[in-house]
Length: 344
Image 1 (cartoon, one colour):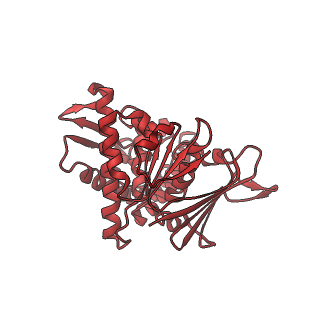
Image 2 (cartoon, helix red, strand yellow):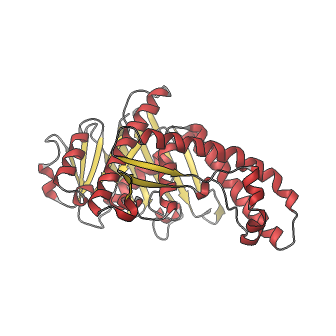
Image 3 (spheres, one colour):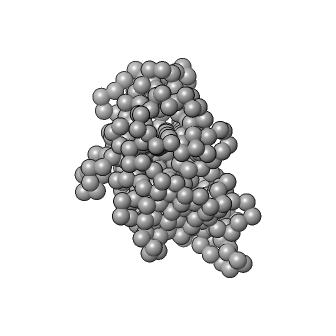
């Protein structure tokens, strides 16, 4: 799998811009706020169908524009994603449109054509930040290699919105509890798949290491929904299920979020990302998607790592196509000599 090119139109700071990448290593150099991370965000949009940095994907649309476009060429496959605010030239439009080789596709058929692993400084907060960040991380990995995960995640998220809306109406006396049955069954079926897939990924991560993850899963079942029936109506929200999942990082039995040093937390994230790289590689091979490793994206990560940890990351660069961003030109002495350089 080789990412050959990326074209952007009205995406973040870019009005119109195209980039060509080396099949080995590409280094993107530029000062802070020059748009380096935007390039990696666009690539990850094509890998996962979502932004890794925005609360709403439409925030990636350039100011005062109706539509943004991201297009990538991977080997013989063209992927294009269009983002809107729901309206283009005063006409109703989908918030997202996905195209594979110029043909409109559903998100479940679009995602997975490009597989990538991203290191960026904010990932260091996976240890200490909110559970929602860790859930998004799990999803960003699994959607790339499991079509059924993508389908069940979409089904679960839609069903959750509908069930919560119904709980609101029940609270107001405008609907009956019997109307929950359909949504209960949908969430139990879809949620069970998500739980099993997340558990399988975490089991893979926990192989042969001093670090470990504890999966704090919120299993959804009819019994648990009935257990929280009154509380859910009062809260107007579904209180159990994978949308409440979390995981906790440990080193030698110590919870890193509470008792780990900053250095230990950084090393844990590095370990997690290395394992993610191997997980996507292995699962892609098992699914018959070829033996190519995912593209490695390194967003100014060297500024966050000490010398020893930098060496670990540098050792990865030659194993797959790698795209690196940095504001520091001195990084040239760290990366391979035949690196392609893009200056912003």
